Image 1 (cartoon, helix red, strand yellow):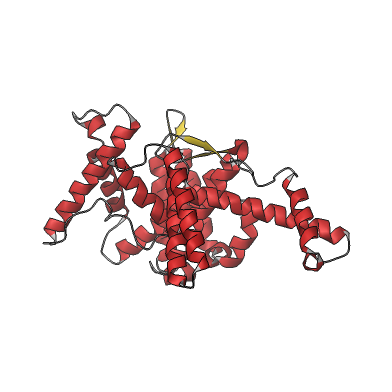
Image 2 (cartoon, one colour):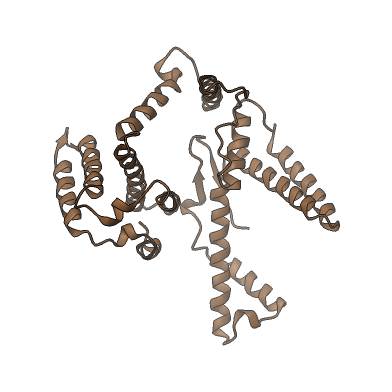
Length: 333
């Protein structure tokens, strides 16, 4: 966990501050023992994972931790989202120890949900592992079968075809009358930027995509003109519709360039926060609150903050988009 997040996490997560010393000590001894078993000079990942599963079973069992025993799939959703974003934050920092730590926190969420499923008699960690293993083999016929895929783009197109077939079979098994769609697997519960990215990416994987970034930039200009027209009117629903079109097109541009729009926006948020806080510090030296400065003074402070070295820029300025193998550079304006 990052230093900047550790204090917040201890305050927000009952899991982080629970004083269950007895269970924790037993679990720690078991994990160290598992890690001491090596094969070929390396730690045995299987034994370590089994020890983690056993530790969570112990915490949920009789005499375990009251907090762990109280949790449900619903109550853990907040922590699953939190841990996912902290992994992204760690990846952005480039700190290998932090990345390993945060990935461990995220792995715990998987183990925790699997233990809840086991206790309810619905599924267990073996089912989780078996299903993802089977899925990976099925979706890599170019590795485990006789299908040929020479480029990453061909692999993505074949993936979408396979997933469409899987959705069709699932729908047929449920006697569904609805035609299968390659977009069915995109959850409407996702944040808007993430949903737009996944929708456009799936469509692009079967060839429904722009020919060039220039074409998308021209579309952004067109959507901007339409938004200006809507802004001059009085229909708020029309304004919302047009700004939605503009945002969706911007997401398409990010995807086309090999960037993740959510990560890019988070980067911009950090950049804005750093510059605004620099304005506050500079204003404090004059003995006046930032809100007591004129518009012209605020502009001057903002301009000065922009030329200061950024403390929030990603290491090297590069972000990798998982699964694309492409890189993009996020530059300060």
